[in-house]
Image (tube, rainbow, N blue to C red; front, side, top):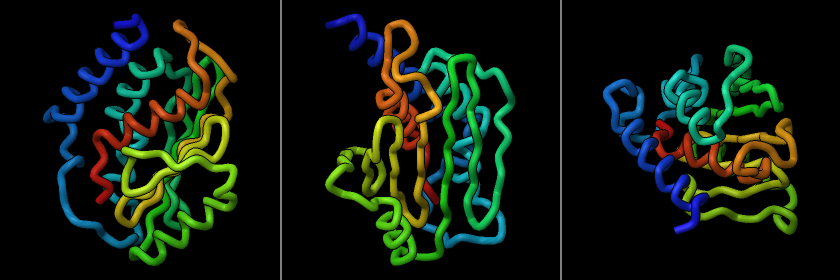
Length: 177
């Protein structure tokens, strides 16, 4: 097994343990809930300390500034900042399946240049070098890692790989309710 593959397996094992830990009470299974006046617990999870730790392990980076979430127009968002650059996570909360499908379709403006991704949420695509969009229940997660360098870290990783890891980290623990 290659060194990189061994490292990925080890990281996946760490995340599996982290997702099952008692420190993540908001990650319980339930049905889809429509958008409300405040962000849902699952939306808040993308910026929470548990997610910060998992992403830090996955990317081998340490935050250089606090992760400060915002909530406006049913969009929960935060920026992760590191010495090499940063990325933004956002979750758009919608009221029903039709609105969720429409918003996801709106973000998928050019299917010819966007690649569908399997194994993330109910549907996902990559929209460029460092952008991934995932639809789950009545929420749409957007990972924008274009603020990271084209390649960084040891062993080197591309921003597209970083975006995939971030999306996987969130979806491994996120029920989306």
